[in-house]
Each structure stands twice: as structure tokens, then as C-alpha cells.
Length: 242
Image (cartoon, rainbow, N blue to C red):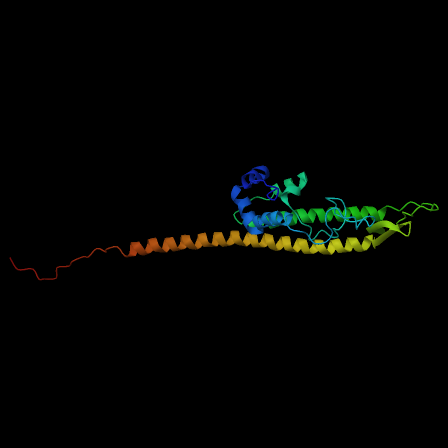
């Protein structure tokens, strides 16, 4: 949002968050430097292929915008609030805000990351349960068969010596599930540590309030002890005879 030119006030209003929280995100994640970097990149010649060249024609190139073919486990998948699904935004709304906004944001994003990884595991298990249909190879047609228990994780196509070339890389579904589960365990551990740290902040605040109350009580008792005490005078002189 910010990189697209939106103001912080507009972002806070759209996400239904305090403006101070959005400003803290800008400072923490250096949004301003990213915006200036984007502006400077437009005026500089980028490395690699330049606009208009056709060196990569027939070699597949990169995937279409928005695809997640390169996402393997989702542990390090980049998350931005403007790219979250409606369910994920509601999930974030369930976490009650507190003054430790940075820890809270980390818990929110780790919660969304955990959900996405669980959905990825479910999708892989569905693929594992679906048996591939048998297809007869036709002459001159590239086979699209996928070995049982495998998925295509990389695909390139092009022309070589006047013929269509097709290169596919397969990865075992079981291995992918295990990789995501291992990454999920690490993400859940990070989320638990963040929650414990957030609770520690709350405990420390309550402990400080208790100490402050005890100090105030001691100060009041000390002031009472410093007050003037009454003095009684006894007359020990013998009385004169009348």
C-alpha cells in the first residue's frame, strides 16, 4: 500500500488500526527507504536482460505475476497486510491489540503463516490420495504423465533444433509434506516464543505496579512515624505543707 503511494492515514483507516501502529511499521520495516529505492531503480539500468530483448524467447522465463510456484514450505513466505485474504484479516482481528505492537504483529503474521502452511499440507495430501489417470502416448505429442506420488515442481519448454523440448522436474509428495511439517514446527515454536514474550511484558508491568504500590505504602507509613509525638510532664516536686 505505502509503496503504491498511499498515505499512512489511509492505510490505518483501511486496516482499521491506530495511525501510530502503521507509523511504527513504517519505521521498523523502513518503508521509506524501499519507496526511494523503487524510484531510483526506474532511472537506472538494471542488470540482466533489458526491455525489448528476445534472448529468453522459448525458454519458459518466469511465472506469471502472483504465482507461488517457488514457495516450497511457506516458512519464509513474504506476508503483507494488503495481500491477505479476508479470512486471514479476520484471523488477525481476533488477536487483541496491546501496547507491545511489534510482538503483536509478529504473532499475527506467524498465525497467518501457520494457517497457510496447514492448507499447503492438506493440498499435498489430496494430491497424494489422487491416483493419476493412465494416458496413452500419442506419436509426436509430449507426454504429460506424472509418476505416482510425485508432482511437477519445475517446468521449462522451448525449441531446440526445430523440435519442441519439454523438461519437467518431479519431487515426491511425501518429501514435500515432511519439509512443510518440519518448517511448520519451527514457525509454531517462533509463535510460542513471541506469545511468551508478550505475556512477560504484561507480567513485568503488573509486577512494577505492585512494587510501586508497596513503595507508596511505605512512604505513607514513614510520614506518619515522623509526626510530633505528645510529651507528658510529671511534677515530682514535694507539695508544701499548708
